[in-house]
Length: 145
Image (tube, rainbow, N blue to C red):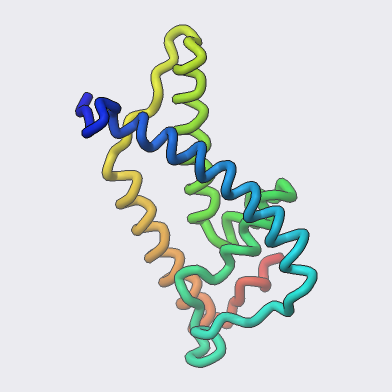
């Protein structure tokens, strides 16, 4: 286990950052969906409007909304990175929380570079597949649902 400057491991640092992001994320989601979204108009993706292709982030907001409503397959269709991020974050935070609560035989997940590599692979494949479906088969993000 590699120790960082303050004597904590990388996993401990990531756990504390995860707690901070959880609090900030909840505040942001509340402000976005309850305060900002009803007040501002939604704008189409600039990349889609200019060049007719989806950007790597297209479908992300719809994927989050679908996941909040329990529609996992729909969320996966709109943007698989959202579900992947929730699973990695949730698993990491849950395992470390249970370890801190001294639950027997539970060890917190260790950080591996392949988590990040897989995230990039998912983003690139999502971008390529969605645009191939759009350009070659005229299948848009909203066609399936």
